[in-house]
Length: 347
Image (cartoon, rainbow, N blue to C red; front, top):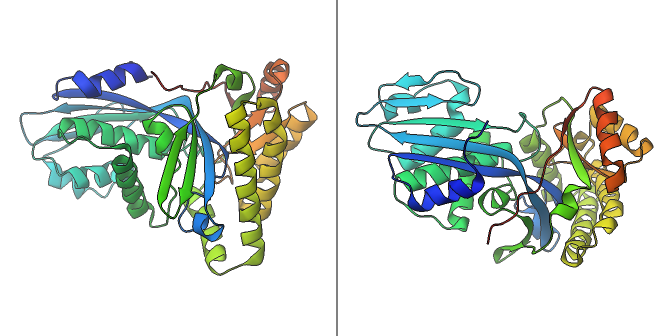
């Protein structure tokens, strides 16, 4: 689907002419601490970490400047561009499929026409941060085209606010960092801000231990997380207890990642699953329950709900010698399987 690599994307951002820009960004799978990246939840448990990994399910955007005022837009499922006479006409479109792009175009307010084609390899509602990764791809393209360099934190802040405005709910920020900087990440949320750490480790050791399975049902992260936020703000004891438990699991995952003791992750993923489902039943679903049973009975070490759950993808974790048989088992049960690979940070 993508003709440009991550490395070529970075090269174009640094050296390409501004009349045509192509970029790609990874999505992510979260290992621990999801939902805690939503403000003010990390404050309510006394700081918290989210651990996630950039993966090679990509989003991308190609932006071409025009000599006139026309705006041509093409989504990842479109065969042809949709044409608008100018930026204002595009922003006035009521077609919901342009909503995310409209949010970014409204911010940049380009004074000339352009054509943009964006695409995503992530299934809709997969729980892999696909829309957030696409937001970062759009920001990379427009910031280069408009010749406005942005820091990592500036990109995260912009993407976060554009999506919150679009969704009309509070959102977390964990999805943006792995789309900007590849690797295995720790995001430590404190009163001071986010402390971002990228682990120096052999990611090939991770690749052999997991794969993703799409349940066939999209998830709704904003709604699931919002229900947790409301209960936590209302001081619901059970919600606060489970959030604190998820925080402790994430701290343990952080230590495992520092020590690269990957075999220890299985028990932590099992704990994460237990506390996440206890936090809100909506994080699971009949499809996820079925998949959990099939995989654990088939020899998996753990099943990890991705993102806010309720559908989307799950991560299946196993010993390397059981990975292929488990993938086959999931396929036999009519689930879609993704043999993804981690995306490492280039020197």
